[in-house]
Amino acid sequence: MMIKDIISLNPHQYDIAITASYYTLGLMSNECMTTFTHRLMERGYYDDIMLDIIDDDPLYPNNQIAELSPILYDKLGFYLLSWTESCYLYTLDALLPLLSLPPNVDKLSQYYVNDKFGLYGYGDEETFAQDVLDRIYQLSYELEWLDMENPQNLLQTKNQLLYEFIQDCHIWLNKHQTTFNAIFQRFTQL
Image (cartoon, rainbow, N blue to C red; front, side):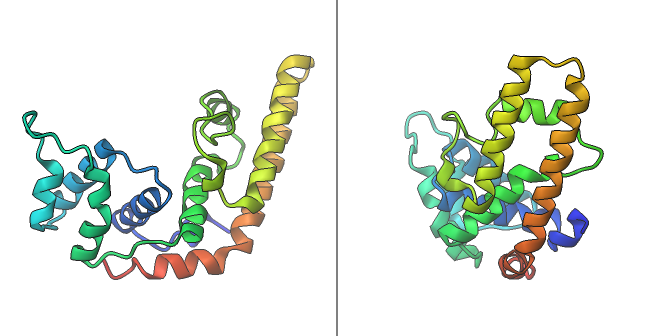
């Protein structure tokens, strides 16, 4: 299955959906919400609350901008996701850049080095769909072990591990296709 078959949303709709998941999971920063609001305004959306979000008056700073997310979503008629839906969407979003074949060792190495999966404190493992988290931990362990052992065929071994990981991710995506369709259906009318 191709990625375009999984994501039935255009980039604008996907942006609204993924931002909703960030809010639900507690990952929405004030800066992220401000940037998102600017993107919405550029696309023609408007509500007075948006002015409160983008107001950058240093005399009256608003440190609770991210907390305005549910109000804004409600006023604009956007759907807020449940915790479980948000976990699935957040996991999908984290995996998407890795799911191309042939495997991209450099890209995955950057995920590993920068802790994109949140395995070592960058994120919270509760934000990932639990049925794929064990596989992410396994891959992390295997890559760490390879780096310490430094076999002669390191690149070939890493490519094989990545290929297997990508296959497992595609299996996970196919397994949850119905879940993704249900989540995305709510955003198709935006």
